[in-house]
Image 1 (cartoon, helix red, strand yellow):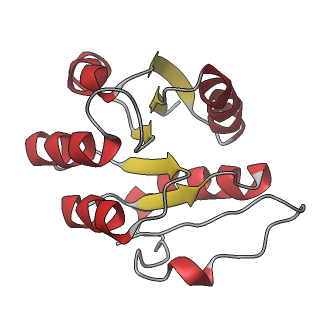
Image 2 (image 1 turned 120 degrees about the vertical axis):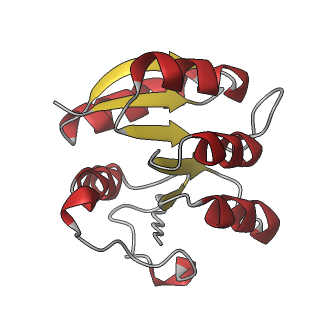
Image 3 (image 1 turned 45 degrees about the vertical axis):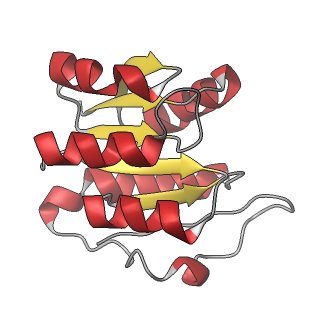
Length: 150
């Protein structure tokens, strides 16, 4: 079974992401509340996917994503964040981040994104990162879902 690491400062969001990743077929092998632990956790577990928030105490997720992808270019990262600013998105895109989910997201949509990422190695294309406005409409009011890929 493929594995995942969740890095988010919200314990509630970590729990929600863990449930969604498990529904998508992943085993969550580690969780962290700050990006400061990301490299160590990645080296220890070598997961198939990293779910990473951008805004957290200490080092931000965009910087951590760039550092991780510089050291481990094969790392597949899904950014799950409420931040939708072009500068942070551009840092993530240049680092090779595969997907971007905008919080709050539709849970069913998030599961489908995680499943597509799981199949990414089979050459199933992901939507382009620069098409943020092309995301499907949410299933319930208040939920948003945005995916991006390169």
